[in-house]
Image 1 (cartoon, rainbow, N blue to C red):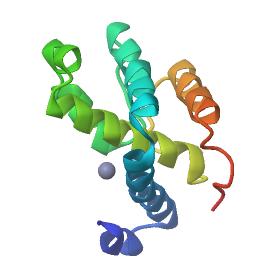
Image 2: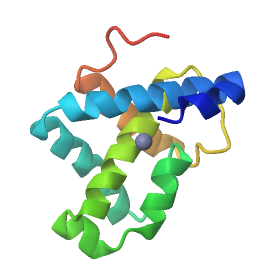
Image 3: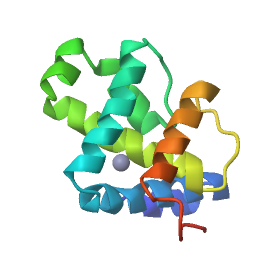
Length: 127
Ligand SMILES: [Zn+2]
């Protein structure tokens, strides 16, 4: 956990990191069907050569991906998907509207947002 470091950072970064870390637990409990469904969302972005992410943790991993990673669902791919999920949750639920690490374009953000809604993750998450 990187929460200790986050406590010393500013409030926005603390909120983002807190939600990100919380959603690592959500990812673990999400189940294979929903995890695969999220993977398809980000795979579609890669097919469309969409750059950008919603946090640095996902972005540096995204930048290292090669086509074989998402075709073979390598460990690198699965780690990227998990970090992308957690960074997207932080973007969606931490209450931070603007951040230098939100580099994914608006339309793709909206697609991810709808995925979170349809996955039933919106209810009960307000901090
Ligand atoms: Zn993480």
